[in-house]
Length: 153
View 1 (cartoon, rainbow, N blue to C red):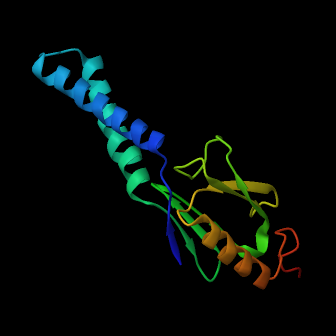
View 2: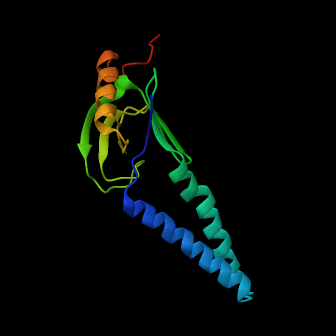
């Protein structure tokens, strides 16, 4: 099942402020006849940031509950967390950097492939339904720890 990310108003503010500054700097460089290489490097960097980071993040942030695990997509970033490796799921308002576009978040602690503890914070729109389904899938899976899941031979 697919859940789109909830987006807080202040995230839209960041998006539009970045877009406006990109347009303003581009306008100044083109119409003010700026010949400085640094100005053009700035224009190119801003447009690359807009096209490669900002737009994909807002257009393509969602969470999929698949048969094999939780699939997280946030712009260009992807992550899959197997249900059997999830240790805890709880609500949080943590402002730390994450794959979420809202502070109304879910914190997921899990075992990574390397056997260390990982953490993902996500912000699905229908948080209660998402948590219910995730916990059902998690409880139905076989718990696994990566250090013990390798075959010996």
